[in-house]
Every structure is written in C-alpha cells, then in structure tokens.
Image (cartoon, rainbow, N blue to C red; front, side, top):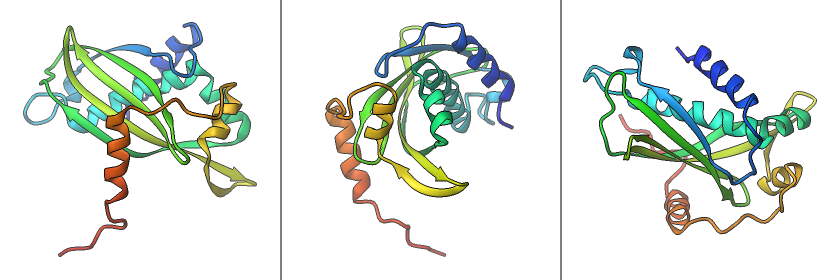
Length: 183
C-alpha cells in the first residue's frame, strides 16, 4: 500500500519550508522501516521509487509546481525512469534524499534524485515526467514543458541537460514501442 501518511507528513513539512527556485535542491530525510523491506531484508526496489516520490512531491510543492498544475487543471505522470542501485539499504537505515529539476526537452521534464546513507550514495534515479492537460475533463495530451516553465515564472528555454541525460534520452529513442509480445 502506498505510504499516504508519510506523504502527508512530507507535504506538511514542505509547506513550512521556504520556497525553492525551479532548479534548487529539496533535501528530505527518510527511515527504512520493516515494511519497506524485501525478502532479502533490504530496501525493496519498488519502495525505493516510492521514497523518491516522497522527495519529488515536496520539491513540487516548494517550487510552486503543484499550485500551477492545480490552477491550470494539469496533471503530471512519470513517463520513464532509470535507477542505479549501488549500496544495500537495511532496516532502520537513515536516508537523505536530494531532489532537483535538471531541465526539459520539447515533451518531458527531467528530475534527478539521489539517496544517501551518510557519505555513501545508495542509489540515484533519473525521472522523466510529462505534464498532461485536460479540457472539460477530456485528456488533451502532453503540455509542452516550456509552457509549464513560463507558468512557473521561468524562461521557456531549458538549461542544457547534462550529457549523461542526453545520452539516456537518445538511447530511449531507439527502444521499440510498443514492445514485441513474446510467449
């Protein structure tokens, strides 16, 4: 089950924190609880992504993203991700998560997050998100991120995305969609 109580706690905490600029970093702190574990008694890979949600949601609140989405009637969805796991996270580990917007292209917004145990990086994720529009309850498709940037008071041009993000975007463009059915 999704950890709604943890989410509400993080959002309430974010409301008491100063606003952030679009490219500023939100820092959040989490604990790996027993119900976050997999059968190998370490942080479940799916729960890792959920903890990253608990860093991105407050980032959106502090940058004004949630306000703009609500005012425009837009939604946001994850359109892709790439995770690198490097350190085992065990029960009651204290984690610090860093979340920041890197920029956008013509369709997607890119957010980088990393999860740390002290000075050791446990994992990192690149999230590709799409802002989706609705008119009279009907889905109208992807809203150009430049339009979102302007609504947030930023320039419509994105800063240059890091080379590793551009390489990931290029690699994803070669991936067939929909995938071939097998079996």
